[in-house]
Amino acid sequence: MESITSLISNLDKIHTTELGKERIKRNLCLDTDNVVSWCVQKIQASNDIFREGKNWYVSVDNCVITVNAHSYTIITAHKTKRK
Image 1: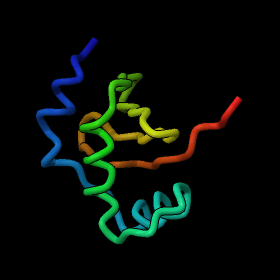
Image 2: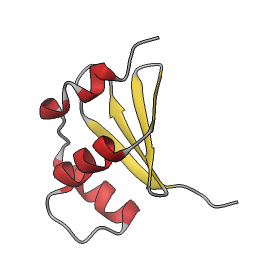
Image 3: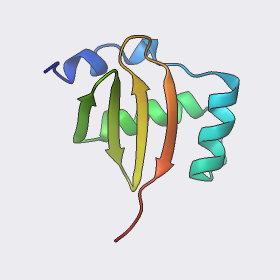
């Protein structure tokens, strides 16, 4: 299993598409235009990062951020469901 240092050491490569930016803002109800910076800050603050298949999953502050492990593209982010 690949170490999370692979993701952490490549934070400068993290990006998203315009559609991804809008999807993340909508899903998380964000009031910021700099979605990538917001996500990078959350990734740095997380203690719950794991890789499953081709994606990294970052759980932090009641949300999950999904990042492609090869391209470092933020695919989506969504709020976690409370039990």
